[in-house]
Image (cartoon, rainbow, N blue to C red; front, side, top):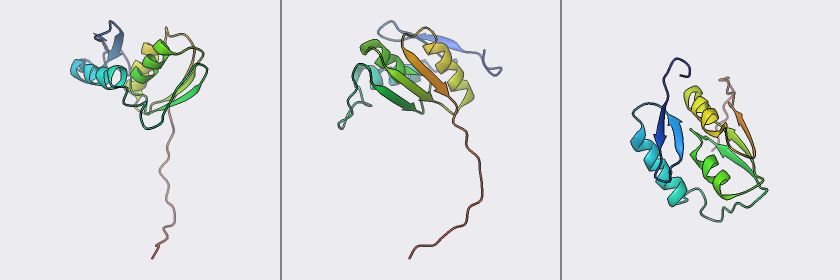
Length: 119
């Protein structure tokens, strides 16, 4: 449980087990296909190699990070996930991963700022 919400473990097509909110199996499978099979985050000139530093912004439950850890060595990955429940799942999913992974919750503050109109 995280923040009073239960987690459920799902099995991906490659056997990987990930934690997410109960009843989100279709979402997990969709994200798995998008990230592991289609490699949609690694297009348009984005390349990743052993030893790289990767920023996973909006890391959700960590599937992109897990896909990288499966294929590359010596990565340093910084995961930012603002949603507390998703971040709790992310931390649980990557707890046993090898490599250097840092999770953070970006902090945002609402402030007033002067507005300038541009012609």
